[in-house]
Image (tube, rainbow, N blue to C red; front, side, top):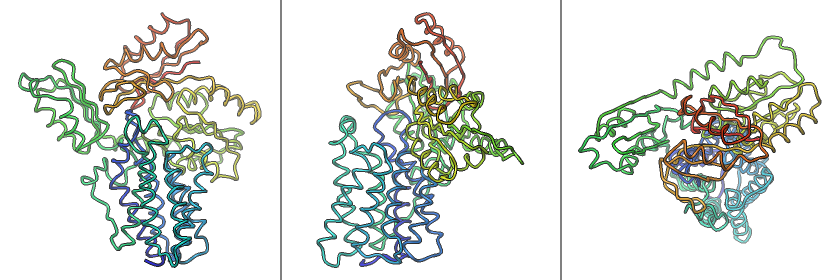
Length: 543
């Protein structure tokens, strides 16, 4: 393949996007930490599909026009850090082919160089051993090859990109010790390699087709925007005599993994507790019933819940006619009706539904910005993986005064809202809100989805883990003991306030027990809130 025209370029994009859609769960599984938030593949797939959908609909056959549409679609659909960086790679590629109806091999190699450079510039502190390293090393290697090869073809260039990106991906554990410790390669880099595999296949005349939902294990199906969709299936089994002899947690987990995700399977004597997100809850129940009788079971349609939330949100967030422009507006991100209520009470004008495992896109922020009518808008991402998308939205809406306050957790976001003062100027608010988030320590309790070791700490699937900021510091089967130990590692004599937010799997009695523990042991004020958040049993803010 000597040149790439518009049709061939579209074939490459379709093939790359389809390959990523087919393999995104494998990429999710590369997540370093055993917390149920492995969403790199999901974020990249949703991002790429958004851009490629627009690109395939482009009526022009010029590569430059298609690349321009692709770049904008990727930017608006970008989710998570991996999605934003991917969008920036292709933004650079567009800059490299601007004005070209067709491209040859050398021009393609140069476009990848541009993609690498633009991606690096988009990240304030680039980390080596990530997708950034993979695109840089592959692009540099390929450009050098193309520069020294007469009449280099586009297929040759793309094969070199794939070859070196694979080699670079294998080297990522040598650059990031945490990858080497867990024994995985970088998930973002793996996603990029998957896209390139699709490109090469298309150039060889074999456009990769998207597999159906069951084949690709695309839980909740194409078109849904989160692995949280499908049926949340929970049950407790009382093991029979025969079941107790034959039951093995790993066997049931393996069976469940073939039909779903977000799996927890924990045994305590003759009781087994199971949680799984799946499109076929009946199959999950049948797997469990082989070992005994149900003591309790619950199946909830998460897609229906999502649609109800979105429908209600649409009604609640509809623009008010002739609404007077305000001086300020706050847009924040949270998952859980209780958390949303907490932010609303603290003057948040718009709460985007999302968070861990449900990273909102750049377009979600843009739509929220369009809904609020204010001279100055503060964005609170409340998650380190959402900050880039918020910053991209601020860039898209460059005609407005938008400030991203880089809150990395729910407690930081709440503290920033508390410090916001509508009666002072923008600069004072920025300083006060940034100072507020710097004073907050965040802890979270969640469950492990796989066996692993983190900095010498042995972690078993199904155990509860205590996370202090980004570090896993405790892993035990007892949720309450993990929470108590986490509190002990976070609270000291200089602290005055502890905010305890309990999630959907915690009852009021358990929350009260932890609150009493803190008040009896430490001289602090404890504020208890029912956040109703998924994934995290407790979110703890210490100030």
